[in-house]
Image 1 (cartoon, one colour):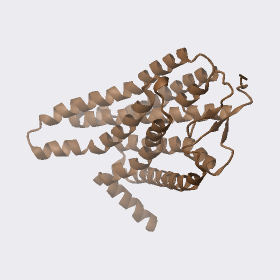
Image 2 (cartoon, helix red, strand yellow):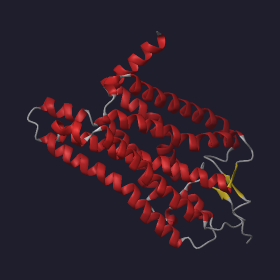
Image 3 (tube, rainbow, N blue to C red):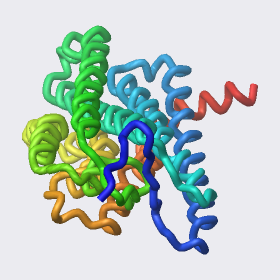
Image 4 (tube, rainbow, N blue to C red):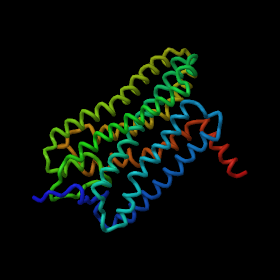
Length: 309
């Protein structure tokens, strides 16, 4: 078996389907989804920045989540769209590692921002009188910088680990982007130690914000159940509905994809789950947060009026 030189050889991204008749319909679907994602998230950012009443910690994190979603999908979807219309579905070795790095960095930053938003809701509901002190602009900025730093260090470690692997005759990645599991499957190196490091480190990076979200909502539920009136309970819970929906979509698919041994890797099932958190969730975020949120509706209305005037 011939080893491919990591510096000169590339990979072939098989994509979502190898059926030629499905390439153009899939291109149309995902191009539309990408446009909706871009427009929706840009509108969320513009609405938040143009309405002074939305200059609060919750909307600070939401605008940054929208920005990360734009970056996350842009790292993955354009290359997938090009490959859907191209007969040569190649990606260089360096290009593959770069895509892997940024997709993990932006994806993990998303999870930390979701954790930051859960903390924000916890403080707002359980400690409202100290909210302005606890969630000060300086602290929110530190939480954002911390999220980005941890995520980028995680990605750097993962890519350095992947760069040490050698690849044999098969260089066809059965996926639509360079993700860890399908690339590990191609390696002819002993990947057992890499798998252990990947699993351990992924547990640390993904489970930490997830546990933070879980702990926050347990505290929130306990606090809300103590509210005597049904109206008060509903008002407190309604501020968390959008966030919980996004958390369920994002973490449900991420946990399914990354928290299984490599031996249980399934091409078709993993593609569906991966599409959920890489394309569907970033596209739905603007709708989830705007349709269920009166403040966002007002902000979008003001933005529309400003554009028309």
